[in-house]
Length: 272
Ligand code: KIV
Image (cartoon, rainbow, N blue to C red; front, side, top):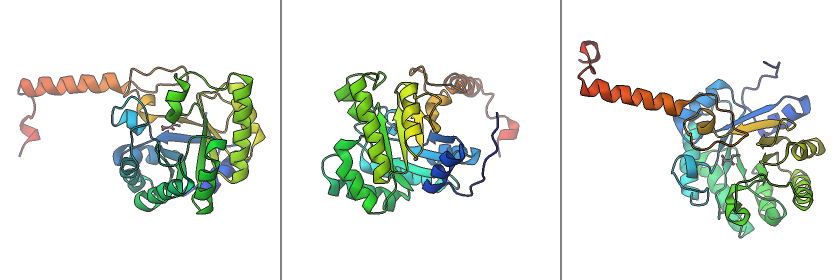
């Protein structure tokens, strides 16, 4: 169903706060390169996330931990060149903001200066409060990320749903309130019970964008390569696959190999 919505020439951090206030759901997808970002932006997505999931999707690492700040800047600058309307949010990678607020600020400044991204995203609540404060004080918009925070995977030990227990749910609610109060413009909630996510979204004025967090939040984010089915080994319950590009691409690559081997390609009209 198509919903009547205000037209934005360029989506800003203020626009997404306004969308929540107006009851308009926010759409967010990942991109890590120019070509994908051009398609996603052209389709009208509100926010492009240059996620550190690039570590898995683009580089084939098992976790998001190995990706570096320079690599994130490379991905983000390619996306920024393509994005004409979308707000571009860039993940600060693991190890660039947790140890020291000054280093966190330096990392965020490098992202903003060298990639041209419009905002940064960090994982965690109270424990990284000082880093978030420094970054916000420098005028850099910050998106929070709570629930399943993949940079902490070795602490969690598993990618299972977070905050099912009362103590963790209570901390998550407190962290969300804290991020709102500090001035973060939005928050990602990953893999938490839908009821809890809705409660959080209703308790704060900044948008809550969910991944595996149910329908009661203010927007949704998916990893683009997963939703178009370029990846096929990752099948969480929350993932809707809109295409099966893994199979389709495999078939056309096989067709191409056959065409080359059988001298069918190139034909008369495909040469000079
Ligand atoms: O890195 C990423 O792609 C993310 C999304 C899953 C929210 O953080």
